[in-house]
Length: 485
Image (cartoon, rainbow, N blue to C red; front, side, top):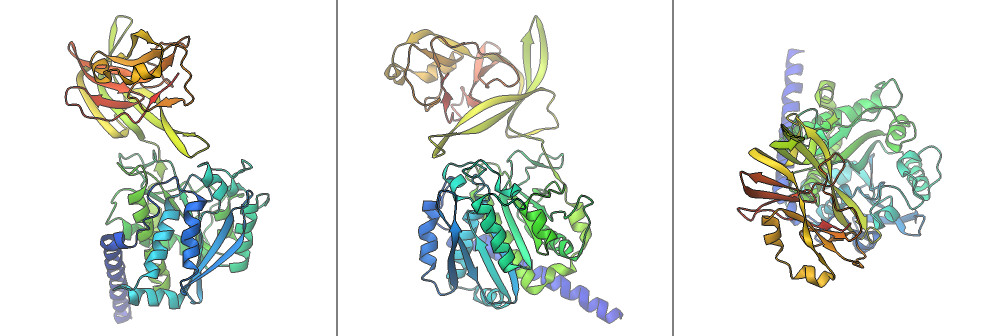
């Protein structure tokens, strides 16, 4: 008995070491599999369709058009392998959650290439049959919105079945009855891991099947697999892996698929510093899913303790896009020490083909328990509302000839344009534009845009325009866009 126990422990350690080695090799070799046609988040159905068509010529893949979206865009099912164990992955059920979709095309490239990973490929394709349903919501992706074109959240349509996309997903599930499922999403970039200062780059969940959050053998498989993936991925993003809220949602696909017998893992891609297009997190998805396939093929996850999953911290909200700390603020003859939390909200423009940033002051006061992707310590400095330049301009061309850096140095965050006929609500100029007749006040209040200056003595050291800080003294910083009011 002792010898058997010893053998099982050593075998488990060897499997874990092999999993770690496999993930490391994927990490360092990733660039050769990365699909070069997808370089940003706002790709569309027309961008992935030729990539799928190309796979029809690869005898490893079986490509099937299983139906169409509400607007008539093709929805596909791609199949790899001939093994007995069935794995089903679906992505971009929400149109503005594209990170995993990019990773799926990297995975398709991985299986299309012949190299030193060939023995692993052979093992996976012999033991598994893997089904991929990329971009479940192509109409939402077209305009970069969460819901489908009818404004219905597909992930709340598992039971009522009113959307064509939800019907296709349910029909595909019923047809496959896969052993394992991966529900691939993006979550808010402002989630933290518990109350830490670390962003939740990835969050996992083994969805509950009832309000009591009971655990049966199906959910146990998902819990154990997540535990193993947590250990594997922690070597790359230590402290940046969380657990998604586990409240039972009876209308959602993941919860019901778990309930209906498929061991289902929710994977949410969150935020990573200086990764606005989610390219690093795309790489993490690639490693996560291939590591999961290998673990399922070898059954190595079944040796994992349930306690690992229990110890993963839940998502929390302790992150702002920008935090300005230790600022003096004077009002009504009194001075206060404050921190300022700012979020830069992406606003869709031109039917989702572009976007701009609109800042908002989210919190003021003691923010010592919060973290900012951009985090500044302004000890000894004072915050003052930005000024509106006194001259009124009559044309946009006049603004183009302005020395805006000089305006910044003098504390101006906005200029006034008389009767301007500007179609967009934003400008690429690094300053705000106020149309004459609109309230020009730059109030420093919650919910207002973040436009102010930061002084040190009599010198203006920083200007904040639409939430973007510019270091005047060192000429450091970038204003992605100003706003037009």
